[in-house]
Image (cartoon, rainbow, N blue to C red):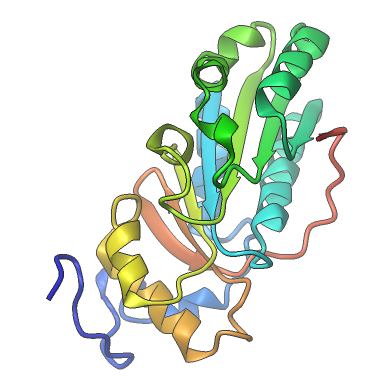
Amino acid sequence: MAEGLRPHNEDKLSGGERGGKAFENAYRCVEGEVKAVRLLKELLKALDVVGVSIIGYMRTGKTNIAKCVCNLITELYGDVLSVYITDNYVRNLGYVISEYGDAEGYVVIVNDDMSYHKESRDKMLAYYLARIKHEFPKAKGVCVINICHYVTSVLPFFRVSTVRILTSIMGKYEINVAKELFDLEPLWDFYAIKSYDPIRHRFYALFNVFGYHEIVKPPICHFSFDEELE
């Protein structure tokens, strides 16, 4: 059997803090009472740079989760500049830095979708993202959210971050791949939930916030970005 894979049994979900109640816990919403979100808020307050990687198939709620994160940051800081980029990442990041480099509020940059884009392997893009806080020296903080379809579709630099969120898992092979970014036990819990009822659990997501894992059902968020760049 491949390393990291074990037989799946819905009646024997993993223990730990979930207490073997993955199905019950997954029906929570991403609101103030969810521990993963409380930890995310603490990170956003404690760190001046936070990276969020959201990984999943099309139409599984990735952009909605990015909006949820933007909404949390707005609740925390009030003055927020949010930029949503869907292509030409180097050019658009250069534009955002030159146009808003003096921003004094909180800056959120969402890169959607980084999968298989040639630019995701561009050294200049890596340079911008690696020193992003230096590009906004007056900002209260910077959050970079990178969205991609598959764990292996983007170089590690762009998918490994402080917060990792998985919105889909379709087979045991994916567990073996995703174990680089998530612990095995919650991955199996997530697989159990997704495979049990793929339609009903379509928008459930596995959060890994600084090592703490939790399966949650994000609410629908109607947040509007300040800039949308292609």
